[in-house]
Image 1 (cartoon, rainbow, N blue to C red):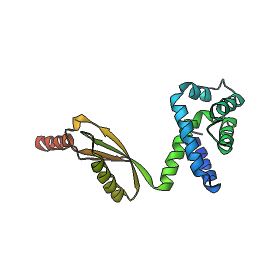
Image 2 (cartoon, rainbow, N blue to C red; image 1 turned 180 degrees about the horizontal axis):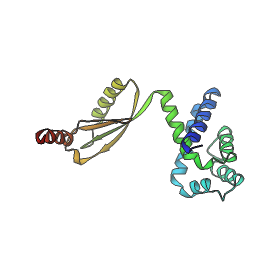
Image 3 (cartoon, rainbow, N blue to C red; image 1 turned 60 degrees about the vertical axis):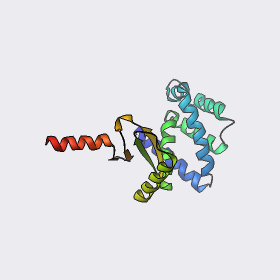
Image 4 (cartoon, one colour; image 1 turned 45 degrees about the horizontal axis):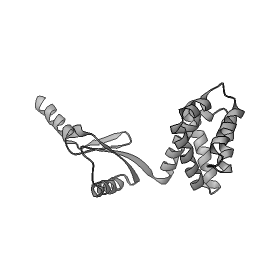
Length: 178
């Protein structure tokens, strides 16, 4: 089974259980804690992915690290994942969980790139217009690209709406050359 399929299955099962058990917010908070630890500890990720570290040892490692920051329900999930030899997929499971949760809540990530930093007012107006355009709640991820000269490019999923001046100049150049 591929990594993506397995990760999505575990994430989906966790999401379903959390919704049915009415402890979704707790699971979301605890997954943020786990994700942060995993992002800052490459050694932990290596240990979880290593076939040399046995499942019982992985469970012990996870319990020691997270004993004060996650609840019993999350420990049950972590034990299950380690017991099934999928502890190395925890980062991917967490990412898939967030994707599934966002889909369920109608939230999409949108990359917004501009030549200079947008003001809070400009950002809010753009997010409002994008929400109206997509019909979904927008989670903006802002970036600056000084090569844009001016304007904004927006990436929603696989679609890019490029309103940058540099892009417009490229299009003008192409039309003049043709």
